[in-house]
Every structure is written in structure tokens, then in C-alpha cells.
Image 1 (spheres, rainbow, N blue to C red):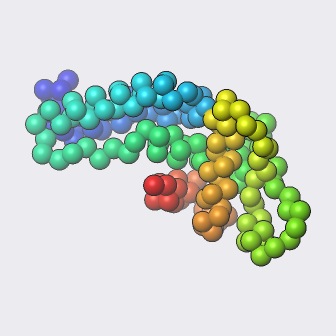
Image 2 (image 1 turned 90 degrees about the vertical axis):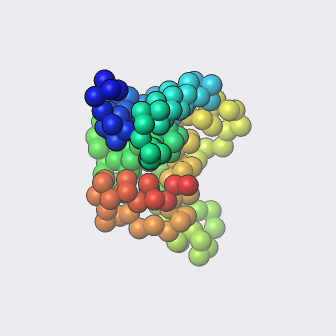
Length: 161
């Protein structure tokens, strides 16, 4: 189909048909090994080369797949923690209890508890990784209590590097 579409059409086709699959399964890809994630990154790099070779002057505007996974993972955390969607409540994390009350603790009342574990397998799991990102987002003092899911995704998209 490349001869039927310009570079913008190829970019939209890639976003709709290829990139949507890893985004929809962020719970699965959230804890994947880096060698498996590099295979997905190679697919995106190949798509970028293909779009550039189609004759378009503009570079495709694609976020990295890790960025997209992080946005989708934090959106699921938002559904779990804020919207309290029933079928995801098994993943709900308790709030962190402060042992000593300080000003920093009162500024971050919704910070999640993170169990300490030194194994790499546990640290790259969905719950651990996205709880850590959630706490970092809260530390940035972004008030997302009155946001809907789309506004939250837009905020996270801007906030992530």
C-alpha cells in the first residue's frame, strides 16, 4: 500500500495498525525484558525508515515506544487508583504510611507504598515500575484529582521526558 499513501498516510497507518497493539497491552509489556522490548523498538525504527523513504520531506512525529508504554501504564494506574474500576482492583496499591509527619509528607498524601525488593525481576514488573512512576508524578505536584482520563493522558504525555 505504500505507493497509494504519502508519508502522512503511512504514519497514520502505522499508528493505527502496528503501534496500537503494544500500547493496548501495557500490563504485559510493562515487565518485559529489555531484549524483547528492543525487538519492538526495531519494528518502529523500520517503520520510520519506511516512512522517510516514501519521499516525504518531514520526519515522522512518533514518540518512542517506551514513552507510549509509560503513558499507557500510568493511564491504567489512574484507572486503578483514581477511578477505581472494579476489574482492576486486584492491582490496587495501598497508600504509603508516613512514620514521621513532615511537610513533604503532607504535600504528597496519595503516594503509593512500594515494597523493597532487590531482584531485577521484581523491579521491572508492572506494579513496581508504575508505582514508582506514579510517585514521581505526584512529587511533581500535578493535581490530577479533577481530571478525566483524557486530560490525565495529555498531562502525562507532556510531563514524561
